[in-house]
Image (cartoon, rainbow, N blue to C red; front, side):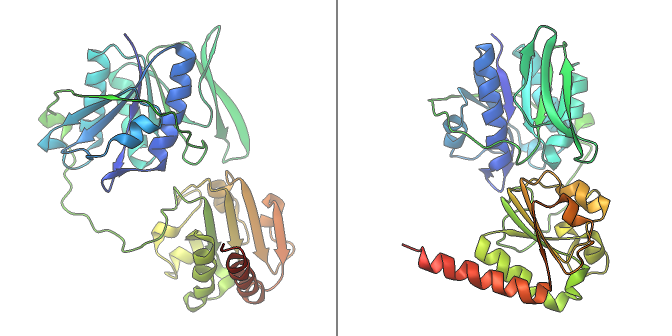
Length: 329
């Protein structure tokens, strides 16, 4: 019996939004095929609480546990999933298109001789000639349909493109024996330095407040932080801001930085170079604040405010704060 397999990525001991998005797609895909959904957790140990997986549609949870899988290794994780797919004769797999998901998917595709739909934003649809799905293309300027009549078929799901939907059920839990070989343990993690922050990760944020060189210096970043705090948003920046050291590079969004798809992206003092737009154009709504009415970003914006950010942003922050206070109960 086949199934739709989902790699359930574990991040800091829990399953985050991209995994729930992948489960949502897998559940709908599996329902259209009349198949169950199997969620697979790989690592040295797995979270004790596996309920989120069954809550979002998994009929079964498979644990692949080995002390050699303590650190993330794309080769080893891909080999584990490939071994499982071949052993259970699985023809369909879904992965979140996170950094780790993007590293695993190509190798998994090769080792299972599978077709790969990369970064899709819809549930694959069955046609007379196989399957089709939609994804964003040409630096977020267009939409393309991808298709394949080949099985197995693997799909990675673009983050923030799917709203996670609960589909609760009781999931059986079983273990699958796998020990990676030396050839697959090519990557050894010597240490991890975590960024000390309580902010929402950019790739998971529903709202992002971003600043550019129009802020004139790092000493003025406080108003970005204040606005983000009131909105419960993540903060980001343009490439020139990261390059001059005003903000850390892990906040850089754009073609050569992090590509995001929040529900709301607020760009403050950013002109809107094509490289920046390529990383944020998938945002559901874009608000631009800039004192230059000819800034290219306005052409890509849903809403625009022409004016001095040093005047507008504090007033906007205060207005949001008052609104929250008035509607607190």
